[in-house]
Length: 274
Image 1 (cartoon, rainbow, N blue to C red):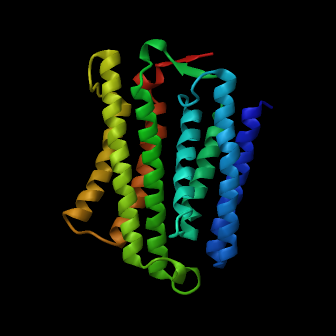
Image 2 (cartoon, one colour):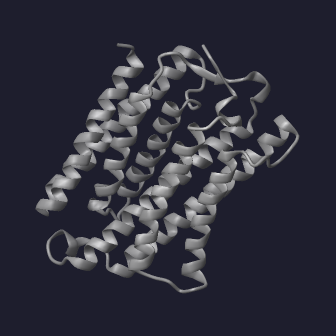
Image 3 (cartoon, one colour):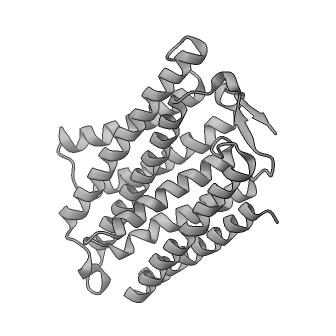
């Protein structure tokens, strides 16, 4: 087994352990299980980082362009955001109840689609804008995943009391945290769309081509724009926005990794195999 793949599967195993600990911690209402889950996520992040770096060094090609690599990097940014937040003084242990199972499933999907051959974009399409595009997309996904996690915690705390739920912030505070992460994700997805437009203009002479990837990216961005409109203008709060954040996350996953890579588009035709 190649070294990058070995580190990859170690990361998958540790993320799976983290996901199980978070779910069992919620069911048993045991703080210690959340702690184990958090440290398992931290330990898994190390080989995850090494796997990306090793593949990059061994091939000399940026490992972000196949569906498997895109999933891997999206999870990388999501776990990084999760760990950074959990390192703050406002540590919210059960947040991983949604974040880590999603990370585990997406990493498993990435492993199933893994290709040993490295892939890069056609030289004519290489641009500095692609880095802004990729980082905007991955960071945006990590932010809205965290927002959905807070949405789930809001719904759970609303219906439960005592134990771990008493240690969570109050409902308005959880609602505000979800809103802030949605706002951050909205900004990063906007950056993804704008940088993608500049990139497309350099390559094809048009800022917008109604490519399915472009259309679904716009739809996803507008979904979170509607969330912000509902909160800021319509003064929605609480349960309705919590459900909205969870449903919007599913739409985001489909648009980011589902539709764009199941139909022939500019995005599926710009790569070359090695």
